[in-house]
Image 1 (cartoon, rainbow, N blue to C red):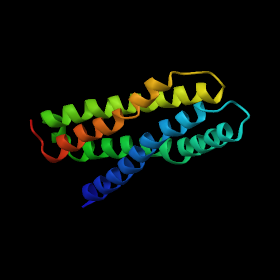
Image 2: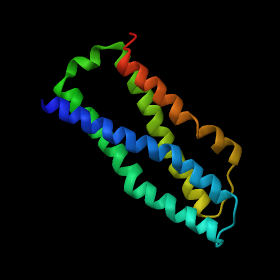
Image 3: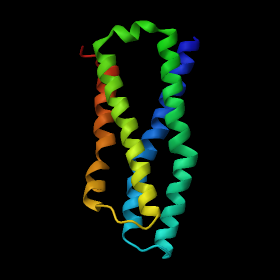
Image 4: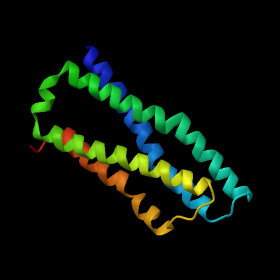
Length: 141
């Protein structure tokens, strides 16, 4: 029963983390359309900082902590091929989170970053989520 509670909360925080991962780059793209000191720039800077502090960072920490707790309670997960692929996707998603935060801090400081790259990378979290869900539900390996 404990395992199912941990799994439920793991999924809840995955949803929160994914919501943040999909909106954070959009906030930064809006911020790039204005200059430091302008209302839009400052609004997006504030909104993305709140998103990062209230949703993104706590969610990614809890996703990992609850995921590790599930492995501790069910170590046989480590023997499944689907789990290795899922874990790879989760590591890539976590790295992308770090990249988004890094780029966001540059934008906050008034530095220019390529908007086209940010637009393209904004789609990657959803693609990784598709892979993760397929690995967990279909378990093709």
